[in-house]
Image (tube, rainbow, N blue to C red; front, side, top):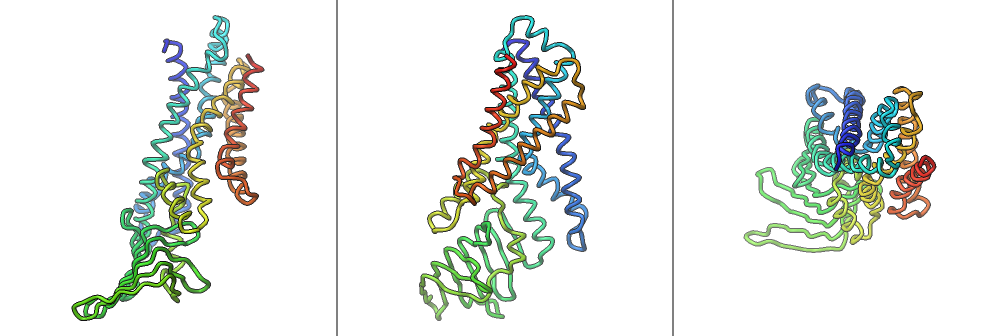
Length: 353
């Protein structure tokens, strides 16, 4: 990498990180405003603030292409306004040659996004949900490794996984007598709402009988009560905030059980296409930077970046939500927005060449 390449790389990378920092500050404000209404005797100001900072990496990952676009427009626009890009072109460097370090900076920014989306994001979300759930619900505990734990008088309910739609996977229920002795235990492959009650599938019941255990197994069983719906709202795992391996595991598990796994497959493909979205935003930014020259100020570049970023995010959300409704495969729903913007950017870049 030449000195010029390093200069362009550093400019785009640092302005991208600076933009991400500004979005992070705005995210803290809006997330905290959303948590203010939940502050009470058990859920303190400090807990709400901790929840915000733990949740922030996952939300930042959703806006990573926008941060990349604004950062690239600001960084490259500054070079254009100082006539540095003009000098580079006059020296015989082609658009493709100048685009190379910019795209490398995009890959570096995508790596930062990967750390947020696959490392800090899911971990922070899990810790944040566990902290808030335990603070706001006395009978509820949510631990990352063992799943959801609920106490209902003399019964303890454990669900290893809680999916979108309130389906519980790998469910265990333990009932105890007043003296602490185990009365019975039930293990079910899954449980889902059935009207006002619950229906359990793949049920195995164990009952102590003196010094032995009596075991029976049924395909399905209906219960009048299992887990209050309001607690499922606290414990549900949102697909967009899960890591790729977890999404893949959930999708396969739901498919094996004949359940709809579309939300998890869609979230999986959206995460996999985030790097493409980052590259698409950089390709979109390049034509604007080279055509801006001296006349374009920072305010104009920022406005262009925000508008294009909002259009990209809005289009992505619309296609992601409406695609499955109209039978569009999750792969296509996730791939279409970044692919479309990448194509538009390449066409605009070719015209500038």
